[in-house]
Image 1 (cartoon, rainbow, N blue to C red):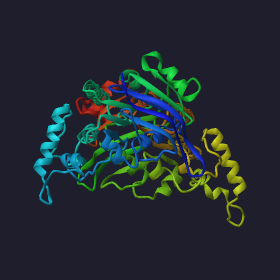
Image 2 (tube, helix red, strand yellow):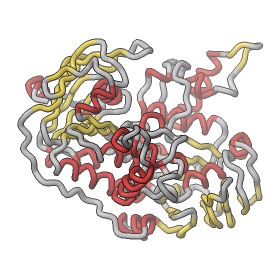
Image 3 (cartoon, rainbow, N blue to C red):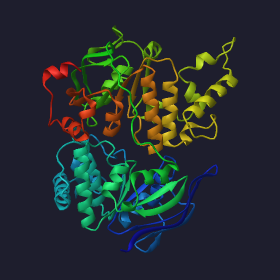
Image 4 (cartoon, helix red, strand yellow):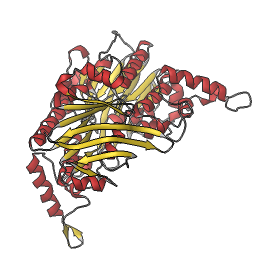
Length: 512
């Protein structure tokens, strides 16, 4: 089969001599689903940005359909037939599905947008590719899976023959993931080519024809997927064997340390995100929270940690209502927080690794005249960098220069290294490679062994089942499932709860 895309000796060097990609050589065959895998910082994102015209190449050549090409912007890539669906959707919540799909190339009636024309265009392309959407609904009111379909249709509407999908299943249920795979296979049959970027190696094995492995900015080779096991792919990515199982001892927690009582919250779009929500976290357990994104998980975490206030309800920490006290006071009581968005809430991206590691404990490094003792700070940070395998040139490096996985490890290091009783963790391994995932999961289980109580929100259901002692499932701001026997639950069963197809009886839910 002919190549639709080929790169030769592709190199990207950023200002300051930072080498992101070096002499990359690989090819993508027309009509295949081709996985791109590699650990965080391996150069996957930079390579895709060059292929989509977001980043300029330093040296090397890109051939598309046999023609040498150079992209000055993403508009050039789109014109040639390349589309990209980013991990974080590029949609306008206040506009309708149809308006988002046609945004920038809308049908016009004179100087005004032809709304009916936009809706017809959306429905026509939806029917053509059998990707069902609700054209009239505002994007803020549709499911995550429909947003995913909309992003794919946006690219197809603009003529994409080659689709780049960045972590497309990160927030989907098993059922939604299977549906997406069926749709991608249908696109493949129609002659489309797909580059599939993922850390989920089971999905790569299930869906893809070939894969290319990047490591430290270099191409380690391209392979037929059926020639490699999941473990062999991991070893190519990380350079060592990766443990893919969870080692967890049984615990028998008794007392409640955190009690959530009747929480209610409505967002700025007047959508009720939490509806009289109640559950308990017991001493020394990991309580997992499952749910499709947008069903209240982020809001309950934000209320517990003090980022937002509930309209009604209580948050009791060791029988004390903390719902009205400051974030700082909550932290001093013994509540740590690894947030969902590591860049927005987890770190100060313009500061150094060292600054970020001590931001919650800096007062303990002051001397008699209240000035910071930088020698003690450096010693402390070097220990954390080593203990948590934070790969940086030194603690004085600006944190935004690190890969996503290393930034996440820095956030985890800061939050796990203080005297804490409860740790709230939201999406601990989103967007990190299998090596960093293994490392962070081991640290979570170690905190459990030390008796910490952990509230864990994760879209990775394998991870959630592997780490949790109990799981509650949220749907439309309510607990619809309470899983006490973790050993018997499956990802598919959790998916049914998440979609609202399955619901436990009230007596079981009251025990949550």
